[in-house]
Length: 246
Image (tube, rainbow, N blue to C red):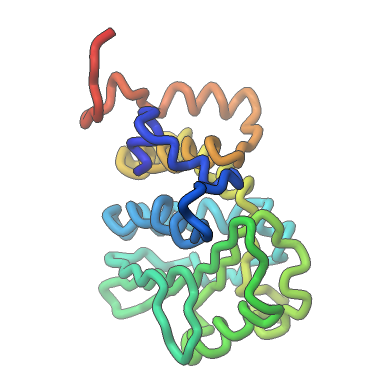
């Protein structure tokens, strides 16, 4: 779908712009966007996925919303493998995505991801239930990502996610990420010289889709120049879809 939208072969994205198809009484926007954006990541390497979430969660916007990141999560850990679980269900609790990373030493890290588009949380305690029930016993090696258009002050009580590092400083394992901040992270990652070709390509496609559905971020002149120089256009991709002639 990302390729079809990028090459203007589909206008399916308009369903996420509050354009209601007449034959569909309900649009499962969050589930469809989860699949469109994050589904392809299952085919990228574990290091690429780790790099992506480092960029997203270590960005200043996430820090502003959620406070300090637990310092032990990303440090001294390099994954060899990752497993995706979309909409896993446990005790009637169903987050959108769980990603489990592991390395050759048997060490693990996991990300519990809840995504919202235009819908509100399913009750004030939706995130609490996900964290307390689904991640039970794994909190020390986990982060809970809440990706939405409005993340400040949600939920109001963040004590279940609060942890204290070895120096006694408080941090939060709940990471609120605004969709615009996510888009900005993709732009920065696409412009980075050490980003792998598959990850850079995904950033371009996913970022293009987000722009079509109204999620745009001002990257600044410097980043815009880098982005234009590093992301291949449709005429120079190794694999080309719908390559026609004028």
